[in-house]
Amino acid sequence: MIKMNEIASLVETNTPKKTKFLQLVFVDINGVPKGMEIPATRYEEAISNGIAFDGSSIPGFQGIEDSDLIFKADPSTYAEVPWEGIARVYGYIYKDNKPYWADPRGILKSVLDELAKDGYYAYVGPEPEFYLFKKNGTWELDIPDHGGYFDLVTLDKARGIKREIALYMPAFGLVPEVLHHEVGKAQHEIDFRFSDALSTADNIVSFKYLVKAIAELHGYYATFMPKPIYSFPGNGMHLHINLSSEDENAFMGKEGLSETALHFVAGILKHAKALTAITNPTVNSYKRLVPGYEAPVYISWGYRNRSALIRVPAFWGKSARIEYRCPDPSANPYLAFATILKAGFDGIKKKLEPDAYVESNVYEMSEEEKAALGIETLPESLGEALDALKKDRVVQEALGGAYKNFLTYKTKEWDEYVAYLESKELPIETKKITEWELERYFYV
Image (cartoon, rainbow, N blue to C red; front, side, top):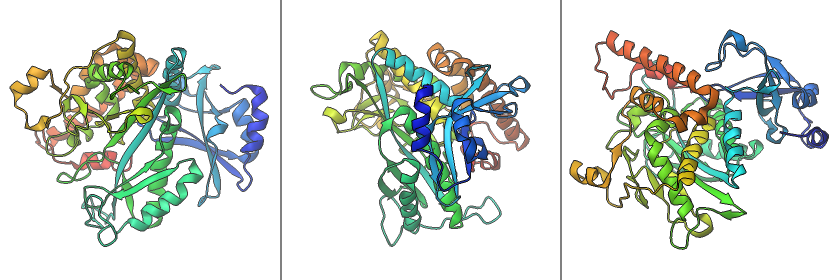
């Protein structure tokens, strides 16, 4: 945490100069930004003493006994919102002068502190995908362009919007690197620079807010929903991950990945089924994780293999990393990073060796071939993922005290969906996108 003697210089560096109000931002269990505004004159108070608020109705927080929480600003995250005339800052939540156990940002920090004790520091680069639609008052979504993968001027009708988003990104501390049209009609991706895990989690929250805000200014709706249209590709959020140790990339081996990296891969593979409850946390997430698209279904890994759950990109040496391909942008990034890193670190501590290595297309393999390699499948529904989470102590420990709240909240979500299907006489295995999902996830 920030020491008192550092506060003065941080406030001096990041004091609101053009704004009179400051948003204090945290996220709920779904990763949705929540917060409040204070006069900018209270900024130093927000850092040192914190600002009290009622958290009893925040999704995923405990209940009426959490009506007295404290938000303390992290001044390193201060940014001014150019089109709003206000500033915003992220922070941590406290209860009874202690870190609040259900605070997602605090949960990630706790896992990162655990890694740091063993000399490891985590870095993550995300690839969040999104759709831009014109909504016409119904759930018949209007598709504004018919571009495809890497299409340019004539087909990418949203190119100006993407550029505007990229121009605003530095104001939030994000460095844009690549803008391009994705596979789906009206689907897009803007990649931003690799950073430490906590900063990247903050950046994902900022990026989603920015994309939605700029889209709205142009009369569009941006959605990060994993699968908004049945016949279209889903929105993924591939994560590029590595660890550093003693200022060196700990994943860097002489030829390919290091032993540390392989142990990390083994840990993720071991806990992959439970991890999907966190990295793919909605009913709709499992409409994306189906054969026929690029989203992974099988628990496997390989070099350059895009059909595998974990891919090793062809960037070795100091750029060595892994690409975890199943997460989607509906995930709470703080909880997702915390659980993935905890699972990978479990592999390092236990020196696990990864199995299910494959370089051929897993989708074209027979059941016998997959069984021989030890290739299993990811859960096919949120209900199955939650069942896997109930059996996985390591992933539970990563969530800390928030585990029971997460399980309760998501079990209720699954039960409500099942009840909806029964009311419509739809089979539980349906892959069609229901109005229930659009109502619940389109704006997340």
